[in-house]
Length: 285
Image (cartoon, rainbow, N blue to C red):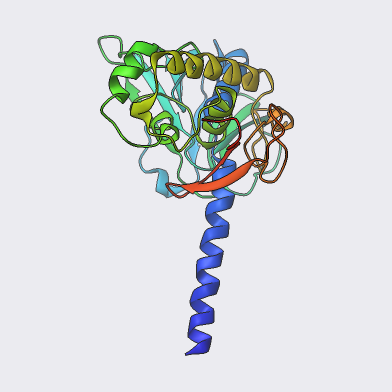
């Protein structure tokens, strides 16, 4: 009986450690925006010569071979490659996906799920947990309605209206991709610290003035994170294999036990919806 309990305990500990690792590696808005801008520079006007799918879990993906890339855009945490012929190649990196630009003469890398060929260059998707999705779609006849993008500013009155009848924590509200596109765990912690709002506070209690603070903080934090090419606290790398640098400027995330950069209080960590949440109880209200 004792050995059975020990075995179960070991499994639980392993699962908790895995969850803690996962919250560090998921690409969020700044990481995907970084890829978008880099892809726009290297792909615009180039013709896709072929697609190789190395993982059957991706399913049947129609080949975009022969189509020229008109542009690359980001929608939330997803990437869209606008192609000639009225098609779009849609990619979502999910938990651990990342892209790497390299010469086709180099040997294949572990965990490569697909390769897009551009003559002697290639763009590969590395995804150890195999959750990324790829599809070739026909562009809709009408323009898709824009998703609220915190990098470009949020409409505070709209957020207040949506939130006023909800009682979930404000951090969970910010991370709801159906409401706001692109904010994940790292940047939700940073935005709420910058706006001095307790992440566990009920979202319905925020005033319009506080929503203005959140919107301003979101734009500032995310803009700076994009300038730093994202946050590398685990395995994030940009299109050219370089780590981001925003981890050097984090004020709350992963700083449990350290002094708050604003008030000198101690940063705490609390679980919320299965994710770690870092904040300063002294100055976040």
